[in-house]
Image 1: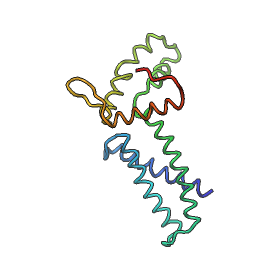
Image 2: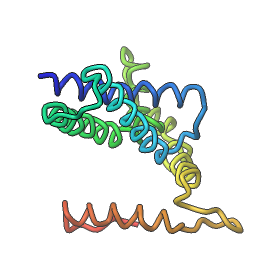
Image 3: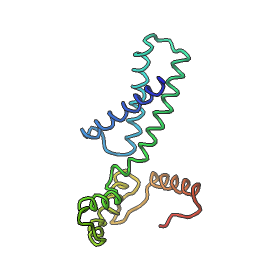
Image 4: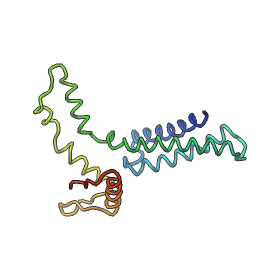
Length: 171
């Protein structure tokens, strides 16, 4: 049972540090920095756990067992968080639609009102700016070009897509 609480502690330390660094603008708000923050917070969490629970410098099997199980839980929570992060970071079209409908819930919302809210700024421009910010695209001479990082990113998603379905990306 201690593995559960230690795993939650490992993840919460990362999450609190991540929110603090994002809110104070100490680091650039790039997805790659999230992984860096997780690794740093994980090392801090393991060291503090070791010295709080087992103050001696000796490592024993039960401590290694607890840390391994807690690591699995913490890393699983981190992966789940990482998958939801893009939807949290940007204005999700689905959330924009739902917020608009909620605002007018008593009267109802016509399709034309929803169409006014979903603009190119939400659907395309924000995503393009994010890809440029994350160095997946370069804007050169009025044209966008894929970077090496962008190619690797795209190839990963194409591979994952092939695992799930035979249907190709439409692009």
